Structure formats: structure tokens, C-alpha cells
Image 1 (cartoon, helix red, strand yellow):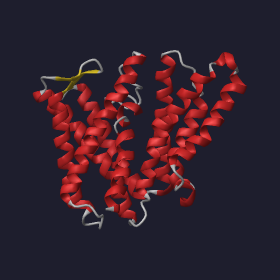
Image 2 (tube, rainbow, N blue to C red):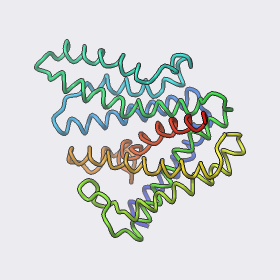
Image 3 (cartoon, rainbow, N blue to C red):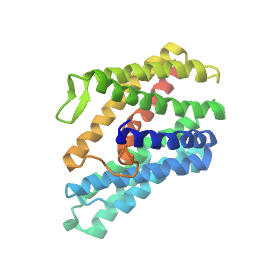
Image 4 (cartoon, helix red, strand yellow):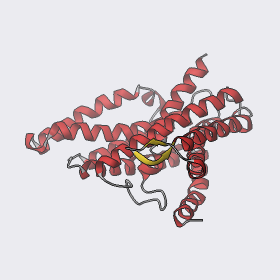
Length: 282
């Protein structure tokens, strides 16, 4: 086993049991963890931006990202039920005021506003849907936990299949200008892995828990999430390439930073929330 793979396995051996435990607990412990992940990811995002000369309001953006991500666990449901865009609308004038009145015109307020708000929504906005999944109306505590596990599981299983499938069979480059190591064969293996994980998890966990999802739709949803997750992975690769860095950080040995580990999750969790809501309404 290579050193990089060994570090990945070691982080997973600690992170997976801890993650499952916190998701099962729910409430403020899960909110605190998700808020911390969002805040740390936002900090790394602003680090990428600063590498290109941008000057975001890091403190405000990090606090806003963590707060929005944790909000579904820490504030009344009727407040959280407001559309997510209302939080963004409230945030924009706040950031604009800071940018204009604290830094002035010479502080590049247009750039500050754009980068700061993008970082908040990319990280905290996306992860706020984790709370909405965990507290899905009409589900039990266990059901809500399983709904949150679903996109995480199929994303990371798909990523694992893509990694080993690419190493074993990878020939054709998927996006050489963005991520030279990714291959078409690896991407297809990832989709297969996501579909298998989704079908099995639906059969073994979601159906017994009374979640209105059967095996075939579960596998299809998982494959879609696998594709969405790969887009999220490539999107972060574009940001890192522009910033001229290999990893967004070094917090997680073998994985890089929080952005490197959760880049796909920022895409799959919100998309799954939307798809599950649509499926449940049919």
C-alpha cells in the first residue's frame, strides 16, 4: 500500500465512525460539526481566491458560512423553512456595507462582494441542505439520519470506485486541462459504484426504515448523484488550477484540505434534497 493510500485509509478509519455517530446524534452536535466543516471550507476557498490577488472579507465569510450550514439544527424550523435565497439576500447588503464603508472604493468592493458571497454559498449554503435532509418532515430520527447518509455514501463509494477503476483500467483522459489524472474509465467505474451503493443502501436501510424509495429508483438516484459529484470534483479542480495549487489545504493527510474532501458533497447533498422532494411528491 502506497504512503498516500495508507494516509487516506487512516483518515477514513477515524472519520467514518465519527461521522456516522454524529449523524445519528443529530441536533446541535451535528450542527456544530457541519458548521465547522463549512467554515473551514470557506476559509480554504478564500485562500484560493487570495492566491489570485482577491481580497475577500475572510472573517465575515467564514462566520456566515458556518452559521448558515448550522442553522437548520440551531434555529426554529419555521425560520429555516424560508427559501435559502432569502439568507443570501440578507447577506449581500451586509457584505456590501462592510466592503464599502470599511475598505472604501480603493478596497475593490465589487470584487470583495462577489468573492465573499460566492464562498459563503458554495460552502455554507450547500451544506445547509444536510440539515434539511436530517430533519426531513414526516421521517423518524433514524429515517432522517439515513437520508443524510445516502448522498454521502454514494458519493464517496463512487469516488473510491473511480480511484481504483482509473488506476486499473484508465486510458482515456476525462478532462486533461482540468484534472489530468482523471479518466473516462475511472468516471464510469465511479458511476457503477455509486449505483451499486445506492441500490444496496436502499434495500438494506431506507426501505426497512419506511423511506418511500425502492431499490431501482435508489440506484438511479445514486448514479445521478455520482455524476453530479464528479462535476463538483472537477469544479474544485478548476479553482485550484487557477490558484496554482495542488490541494486546497493540508488538514486531512492523504486527502488535502476540507474542500478537497467535500467538493463533491457540496453538489450532491443539495441535489439529492431536491430530487428526493420531487420523488416524494409524485
